[in-house]
Image (cartoon, rainbow, N blue to C red; front, side, top):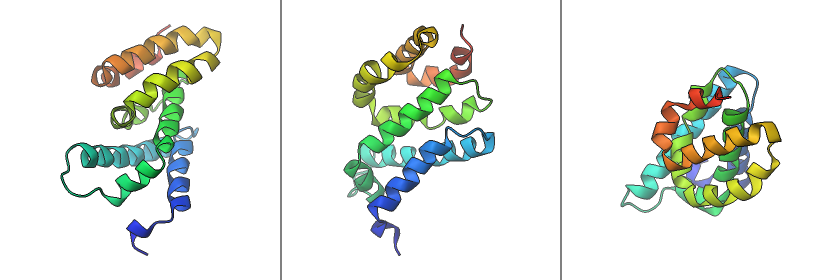
Length: 151
């Protein structure tokens, strides 16, 4: 079976499995899942922004299911911002391409859906981290561990 003929259900399963693996308790699993997501999202970003060729099959699959990346991004942000995990760098790797691919979605959904459900004690920290993330993603990624331990 050639990869362009990859069944949509299988593709969705693989992407969602990577998103769930990013919430794992095992640091090695988190690192591998985030590395996979980083490679996929970076490739998609390069193909959509820089390529003048017809869209790659992976870009077409992601465009068929636009909510997949945003839901994975929400999971990674929740883990990176709200949990104390030893693999912050691994969690930060896929953030930049995912943010760049989903900037409008993030700005709308995060403020309206995610922030209201965060417990009161962590809400202020999450909001300040979120604002910093949206305004300057590269700078945020360099200082993610500082923000996580901000109290």
